[in-house]
Amino acid sequence: MIVVAVVHVLLALLLAPLLPGVINRTKAALAGRRGQPLLQAYFDLGKLLRKDVVYSTTTTWVFRAGPSAALAALLVALAIVPFANARALLAFPGDLLLFAYLLGLARFSLVTAALDTGSSFEGMGASREVTFSALAEPALLLGLVAMAREAGSVSLSDVYTRLAPVSLVEGGGPVLLLVAAAFGVVYLAENARIPFDDPNTHLELTMIHEVLILDHSGPDLAFLQYGAALKLWLLGSLAVGILIPLHGAPPVPAMLGGLAGMFLLAVVTGVIESTMARLRLVRVPQLLVGATLLSLLALLMVLA
Image 1 (tube, rainbow, N blue to C red):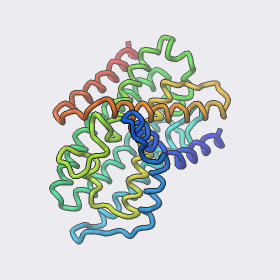
Image 2: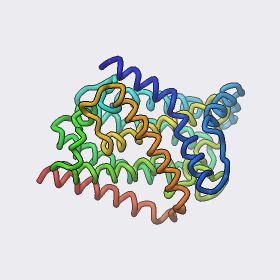
Image 3: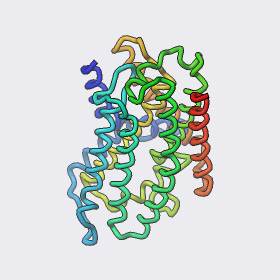
C-alpha cells in the first residue's frame, strides 16, 4: 500500500496542473471557442521558472518566504490526503485536523506576503480572503468531524478507505451526501472559482485571489500557481472520495477511477463557471454559512 500511496503523490504532482486546463477547455467548448491547450498551465509554469524575480523595495523576507511556505504546506497536505482506496503516505490519528491547519498555514503565508507589500489594494484582497476562508473552514471541519464520527476514526485514511460503493445507499448515505455538498461549496470557495471569484479577472475591485499575487513574479509566481493547482486536487479529492467510493477495488482500477472522478469534477467546475455568474460579495457569506449548516446537519444526524 505504500507503493500505491507514493504513486498517488507522484500522479498528483504531475497531473494537478492539468485540472485548470480541463476547466478552461470545458468553458471554451461551452462558449463555442477553441480555447487554450490542455497543457497551457505547464507552459506557463516553465516560462515563469525561467524568469527572474522582481522584488519591491518596500517588501521584507515575509514577502519572499510566502510562496515557498504556502507551497510547502500544500505538499505536506498532499501526503496526508488518501486517494481512491489507498491510504495516504502520512496517515496517523488526528491527521484530518493537521490537514485543515496546513490549508490555513498556506493561506496565512499568502495573506501575510500580500500585506507585506504595503499596498492598500492587496490589503483589501487579503481582508476578503481571510473573511471568506473563516466562513468556509467551519463547513470543512464539521464535515470532516461528521465523517470521522460515522467511520469511528479520526484519520482521513481510515475514514475514506472504509467508504464502500454501498455507502451512499445505506444508512450513512444522507450524511455523506450532505458532507459532499458542503465540500463542493468549500472546493469552489477555497479555489477562488465562480460563483465566489472569477479566476480570469484582473485589476478589478471585486477580485479576491488574483489581487493577492499581483506583486509576485518569476519562480515565486510559479510556486503560487502550482500551489493553486495542488489545492484544486486536494479539495477535489475529498469530494470525489465520497461520491466515488472505491473500497475493495483492485489498486489499478481504483486509481483510474479516482483520476476519472477528478477530471469529471474539473469538467463540472467548467460547466458551473459557464452557466453561473459571480455572486455579489454580500451574498458570498450566505452561501458559505449554508455549507456550514449542511455539515452541521450531517454531524447532528450522526450523533442522533
